[in-house]
Image (cartoon, rainbow, N blue to C red; front, side, top):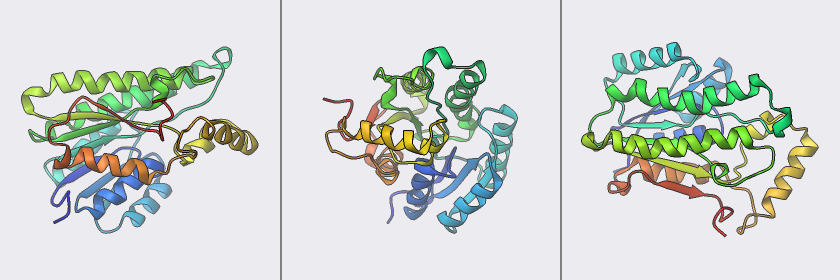
Length: 249
């Protein structure tokens, strides 16, 4: 029997990168997977790549009305959510003196507000003993240049894993954070850097990783599967760092 047979999972931002890789693995392991995304074309393509166990709901996690629609859809069709992977996130690299109010608001709205309210809105559908996974980052603890706003949002996400664990302990709902290091995902193309700058950034980051390379989205999906399944039945409130050793040495 596969590890998630009969489970219902919701993955925000599941139309690309780490979210999509996790959705594919969850579906392969027997879960029905509902992903969200802000662009219909990308969402449809992602659902097709997931296969028969995949389903998409168009929406922006920063908009509570969209999260209400997600809740209503899942409730009407499935009645419950066993696993939430609150994964949607954005990041723009900007020196502190160049950060705009628009950049600040968008990053906090998606990474923090979206993470929190995705959990809050879906929580009534989570049975006792369910699993909630938050996508944080090693940027929450490393003082990386031009990462001030993004890093602050991920520190907030890491904190939420602790506080939600306490809030939900009576229901035995496990809440954990995954903190990726540098992972090769489409988010690099959304940082505001040129292709040349992106390659330079990747090269510089790689030199700081003891394993000598940037990680793959599948290498986040596998730890997410661990935290979603009964393999981690006595684990809650942790930060599972997946970074090739970058923040560890």
